[in-house]
Length: 99
Image (cartoon, rainbow, N blue to C red; front, top):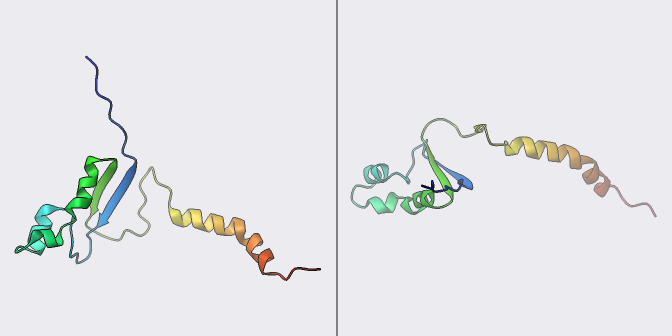
């Protein structure tokens, strides 16, 4: 018998619900936020991305700043390194051209 293959999720979406949220991807939380009309506080369509090529998670506590998972590269580090590498080019572009 063959084992069905599972494709790896190609993207990760993290919904920040750590500070006084008015919307949620979690149906129970959306219902608590707007008991009279839970759909008005629901990102259920976004949560449905989990059924496709996305890994979906909810962040419910603390700051997201600086939070990097083991398999991720922090964009702040990338931008700092890029800025250093391109600094001389930016400086040269600011200098007046000599005829």
